[in-house]
Image 1 (cartoon, rainbow, N blue to C red):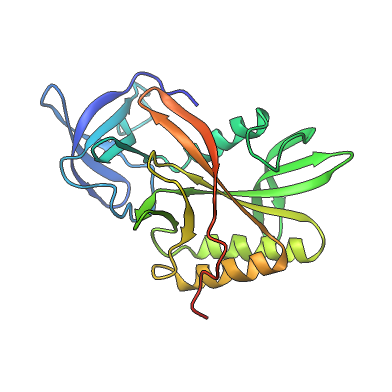
Image 2 (spheres, rainbow, N blue to C red):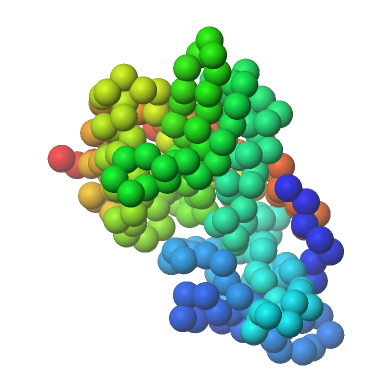
Length: 238
């Protein structure tokens, strides 16, 4: 996934979840859209280098969208959680997700479960179907990339629905896309969302496959990277 030319800036502050004050290199202060509904824990320190996508769409109130941040020297993190599905779509099309190669058809946003849509439905005459749900991972603590960074009832629902599909005999996959250049292994942030951790353990026990994929991030774009290990131990305390 390639970016259009981005502008460098410095973060002044993020507020109201979807707004961020930025200082451009020419000294101007602007308000940028923050396309990340999570807490952004540890990835939005004041003064952090950022990259913004400008736009001239008269229908958009904000003329900048926050795409990348460098919370620590040499560490790039994806701000736009919506980019995860676009990167995974490219990875699936290029057969770069180990275990999900070779499906004849990849369809996005297919209805399933109780009023939900799965991110991707893979199908093949010989292999059958695979339901693939994608989560964007941006939190890092103690050498781990962790999900989630805030309570996610929607994420818990997705795990529960995948578990039901797996128990019924369908292939169900939860794919964690690590949108950080320093992410090397993945686990669940049970202290942040214990309910999600319990749902994760239950889903894995029901047969949901837990996969993780790294990314290669530059100000020019985001590419799918290498597969990453997911902690194989219990994620919840109970």
